[in-house]
Amino acid sequence: MRKRQHPFHPFALSSFLTIAETMMKFQPIQRHKTPSILLTVVMLLFLACGGADTPSKPTVTIWWAQWDPADGLQELGHVFEQETGVAVNVHQIPWGAYQDQVFLNFGNNQTDFDIVIGDSQWIGRGATKGLYVELTDWLPSAVDMSKVHPRAARYLCEYPPGSGRFYAAPCETDAIGFTYRKDWFEDPAEKTAFKKKYGRDLAPPDTWDEFQQVAEFFTRPDEGKYGCALLTGRGYDSIVMGFQQVMWSYGGSWGDAETFEVAGHVNNENAVQALDFYKSLVQYAPPGGSNMDYGKVLEAYSNGSAAMMMDYYAFFPGIVEQMGDQTGFFMMPGKGDRRDISLGGQGFSISTKVSDKQQALAKQFIAWFLKTDIQKQWITKKAGFTADTEILASDAFKQATPYNTPFAESLDHLQDFWNVPVYNELLAVAQQHLGEALDGVSSSQDALNAIAEKHEKILTDAGLKK
Image 1 (cartoon, rainbow, N blue to C red):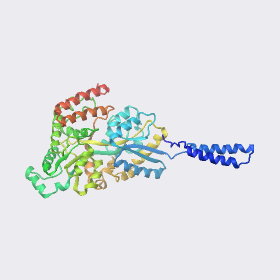
Image 2 (cartoon, rainbow, N blue to C red):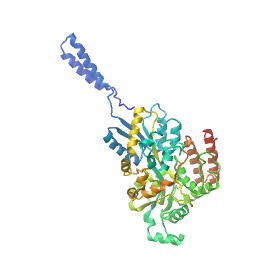
Image 3 (cartoon, rainbow, N blue to C red):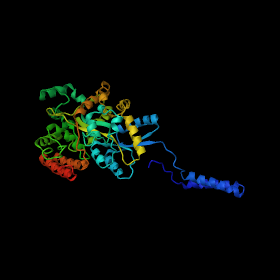
Image 4 (cartoon, one colour):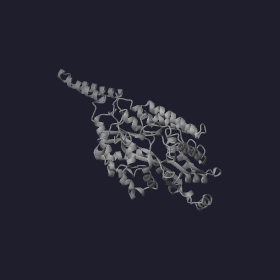
C-alpha cells in the first residue's frame, strides 16, 4: 500500500511497440544484432508497465479526524519533512465516520496508517487487543514525562490509567468549556436588570446554581434569545460528555475504577439529582435543545440564539474568528468544592500492523513533535493545545487567545468516561438512556438504574467485574 502502483496502459504499450518496429525496420538484418534489438524492446515494455519499484521517499502516514488541529499537524509535518527528508501525510476523516474507519482498518493484516490519533476511550481496546505498540520503555526517553500534565498522561497515554504503561503519546489535549455572549453580559441595562432580580452582579457563572440563574435570565423566546446550548446529542458521545460533568460535581460517578462496581455510583441519589438538574436546564435552550451535538450547539451560539454554549475548546478558535470581542469564555462551573470537566483530545498511537521500519519513523516524528520548541509552534496553530505544563503556565500562552487561560485552568479538573475495551458498548447504553430521560420517556432514576444494570452486565461479561 505504500508503493505507488503503475498500471499497464495499452496506449503506452502500442506506442513503444511502434518505436520498436521502426527500430527493427532500419536495423541491418544481421543475426548478431537481433539480441540488442530485442533487449531494447524488452526494456521499453518494462518501462511501459511501470518498471521496477523505485525507492520512494520515506513517509509517515497519520490518520486523524477532520478538523482544525489536523490541518495544523500537517503544517508541522511539512516542517519535519524539510528537516529530516521524511514526509508526513495527515489523512483526515469526518468525525462521524472516524472511529468506524479506524477499527475496520485494524481488521486488515496491515493498516494504511502508521500512527492513529485516537480518542482517549479507544486506548483500552488498542492496548488489550494488540493494536497499539506499547511505548512504556520508549516514551520517557523521547519526552520528559514530568513536563506532561498528569491528567493528560493518565487519560490520553496510559492503560490502565495510572499504571505507568504507555500506549500513546500526547498530541491534542482538550477539555470542555463554555463560551458566553460578552456583549450581552456587559450591557448596562442587562446588568442592572440582573442585579435587581438576583441580588448579585451579572458575571460568567462559577457554580451550577449561578449558571441556572444566568440561563433563566437570558431566556426570552419572544426575542429569539435563550440561556444556554448544552451537549445533549445522541450521536457518538455528546450527551455523555455534557452530563457527566454535572454528575461528577454532584457526587455521582460511572462506577468504581478498581472494582468496576456500578450500582450505587451511577444511580445513587447524587447522580439522580444531577440528571434532574441537567434536564431542567434544557428549558433554557433554543428549540431542539434536548438533542444538540457539538455542531448544533455551535450553530445555536453563532446565530445569536444562546447566551452560553458548552463545547470543546478545540472548536473555540472558529467562534473567535466569527464573533470577535462579542464572545468570552469561562471554565466549567462546579458545585461546592467539586469541579469536574470532561477530558477531550487524543494521543498518538503507533499501529502494530506496520513494519518495524515504519514504527521507527513514527517514533521519530512523535519525538520531534514533543520537543519544546515544536510544542511552542504547535500552540500557534488553530486549536493546537499542548500538555506541556511549562508552556501552559506561561504568560505567553495565557495571553495568546481569550480562551487559553480557562483552558489551562481546566486541566487540573479533567476526568474521563470508561476507557476499557468495551467502552463503546458502555457508551451506547449511556447515550440511549440519558437521551430517554431528557426526552421524558423515563425518569432520571429509571434511566440511571437501567444504565447501572446494563453496565454491570457488560463489565462482567468482559471479565472486568468479578
